[in-house]
Image 1 (cartoon, helix red, strand yellow):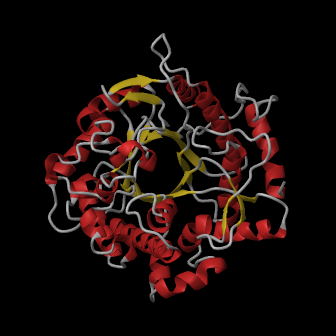
Image 2 (spheres, rainbow, N blue to C red):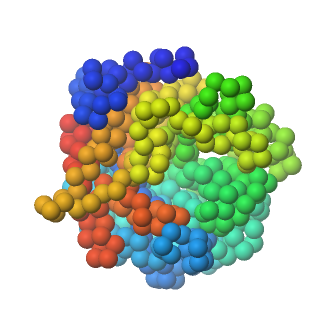
Image 3 (cartoon, rainbow, N blue to C red):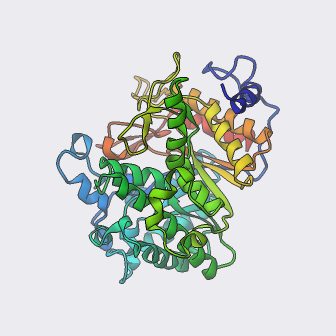
Length: 469
């Protein structure tokens, strides 16, 4: 156990009560008071819930093409309909209000606004987000807008996508288009969602859209997303001075799978790509030494100055730590390895460790200037079923959320500037390459009928918001 972990466990134990983090029924400590302006929210993304892929002039995205390529997505599922949020958004906003959420993070579909990724604006696409924002504000729910959640216009992919430097300026232009329509009412803007995950799975491993492979492609996608993020931050800051701007990263504590020297060395290589390649350029203006030599050919004069933009907040998506082992020849020179005995897992096969959330938040406090932070995704996949009483009694998810809310309170107690918590996800939705086989939502969706059923986890969060908000 590292020194950091030794410090975290007492904090987490205090937050969870005497029974500790390993017990699903552990009661949260009532002494911890979240700030009065703490954001209690839910997160979604456009391609995963909107559907209506051919409505109102929307262009094709890389995920439209990927899904319709045989063998790419489990069971041949697509996001063509998803949760049909495009048509059912009013009812969905009412669900947010019913849960007492005061914030909602959604993404804008780039091809719905700019069908070709650039050039002609599709006003009907902007009209949809205009109505959604007004609907949220009417319910006293703060809109949190994410500009990019992996659904790149296919027309831009045909020109190189995230492998091309030109994409950075196109992304900044897109950001301006959206801000000029919604910036008078939307004040919280995230540039990208999980650029590292998108680069790894979409451009390195090929099991996400657009299906490319190789370390060179992965690193190019990382750098050009970083560059696009910087350009968009500059563009939005020039558009309006009253916007709160940031970005969203998937971050994990990285731990060795064994005490071997090889596995300990693998931790540094893995962390440099997974966490450092996104954090270090943004906050420090350089890439980690472990990958700097590989990424240097992509870096033009002025790039690092553009990437190192001030941000008003950082969104942290957290699900699990990464236990890694040496894996010569892999994209990282390291890969996921054995986890400690007794570890619990979600239905995705992801290990459960709420202490990892506290750990990564404290790392940001200690090594990146203690920025204003929001947990912008946290949640768990389980094989939910509808009981004979018509309800979904997802006790495992309730336990997961209880423990991670406690982990967030432990970070607050440790001086982390944590200002909000968003569950992933509001709905069961299209879960990328897993299709509809995996359910993360606190609201169950029957994809045949589109019926929404709030789960026990929804009631748990509603009660948490009421007691702690």
